[in-house]
Amino acid sequence: MASENNLEKLRLTLATTRSLLQQFLASVSIAPSPTSAPTATRTPPPTDPLPLLHASATLTKAHTTKLTLLLLNPPFTPTAISTVLHDLSTGPLPVMMAAVELCAPGTWSKTLSHEARVGVRRVLGGLVTLVGEVVIPTPSATVNGDAEGPPLATGGAGGSRDSLASTGVVWEACDALVALQAKGLGGLVVEKTIQYRDMLKDAISELKEWSEERPESSSGPIDDFADDLSAEEFPTASSPPSPDILPLLLQTLKHLTLLSLLYTALLKHRLPPKTPIPPPPPTVQKLNALMAALSSIPDTADELANAFYQGDEEEVRVQVGRCGARAREAAGAVRGGWAAESGANGGEGDAFSTWVGRWEDLVRKGEGEMQVGSGLDGRGQEG
Image (cartoon, rainbow, N blue to C red; front, side):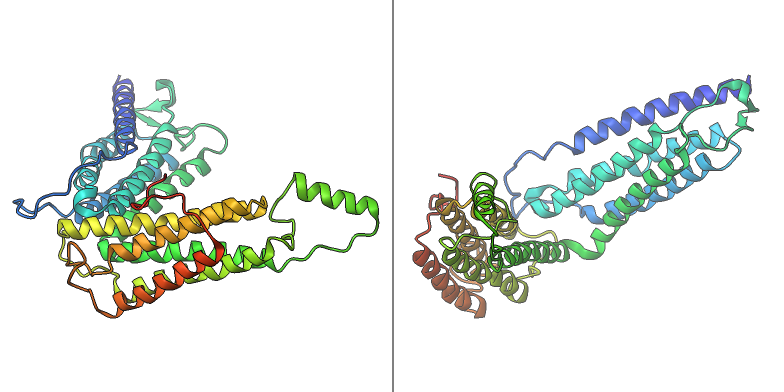
């Protein structure tokens, strides 16, 4: 009966672990509700979530390694598997969830809060898959609770590969959470800014390559008709730009290149933010506004490219205006530096604020030449 007792304990532990993982996954998949920024006089100071994420991710990776080894190597040991699952459920996972809750967007910025949630969600998703692959053998296949049959506790012919794949997902996600502590808030902001800049440069490169395409010469009226049909009914990036839209395309490329310079200037003069940890509320507000604007520009550039492929010049001008409006929002958020709440002092008058003044003049001049419309009100909201 020892075998049946051990297997029954494992069944209960698996059910409890699966239920807990699903609850945690549902919780972390819900975006944190918007809350007002904390007051500067709040005591005690908020707990830094990064060391907790580091420690819990390290332990989670270790427990995942133990579990995988138990699943892949004979004999099948229900008691050992139950112990690992229990330790995982009662140790690092609750700590990891607590760290996510501590990482409030109003205290640690939306950027760090989002990164932590995404990382923890990947860890939990990988564990759900791995634990879901466990198959409990029948009591007759065990001796004193240990299986003498196949070493795998996973179903299907590809069970070993599936377990290794799930384990790899958990390891990678845990490593990313561990790395967050080394990066810190400042390092993460720099990393994201570089990522958004590169995305914008990719969009510019794609449009530049498209601008250099020329239609192939046709060999007769049938080919001409086919080309016209393709261009009118099925416009895509593979269709060369028409001569009519080419001047606007070249102007847009120049304009987007000008906007991309803002990322480089921010990285040189404003990032990473020079601020205590945790940042004071005004700094968090500035940081949230800055990163929201910087992240939206590459997405808007993609919409702009699609408008070009469709030959919609009016929509192109709208999207160009939106890119410019978002870029000005980003520059305005930290034009006066990080310390100033209103931008009336702090960094006002330094090299960056002076550069931004000249940059904004060029942006507005380019928009005027293209007669763009941003579709945004003065606050940068959709009109």
